[in-house]
Amino acid sequence: MIISENMMSQEEFIAAFLSVWDKPECFEPEAVDGLAALSATITQLTDASNNDIYNELDKWCENYPKLTEVIAAALRKPKNKPTDPTKQGNVVDNRYPELYESLCKRIKPSGE
Image (cartoon, rainbow, N blue to C red; front, top):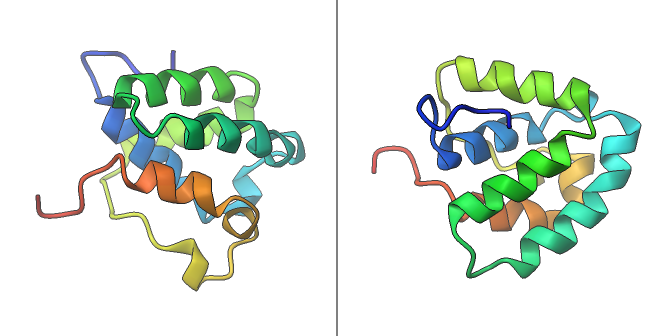
């Protein structure tokens, strides 16, 4: 488990995952390949709780230690609203837009 239940919320973890989404250099080649399975899982869980989504992300991240380290570091940094990588031509998002959109729906917009 990447986060302690007492330290951060599942929503904060999802936001941290999204914060590295627009940094393709953080994704190991194997992680990019693994996004297909993660996308299929997450997009099927539209009615699931954030805890369920967190558990799936956490389980998936266990296979990618470099990415996990980057996400953990993002959890320690001040929070910024995730940028929309479709506007930046992000390769990862272009391959898995449903995954990005599904995860974005899980976090509250800034100011709420």
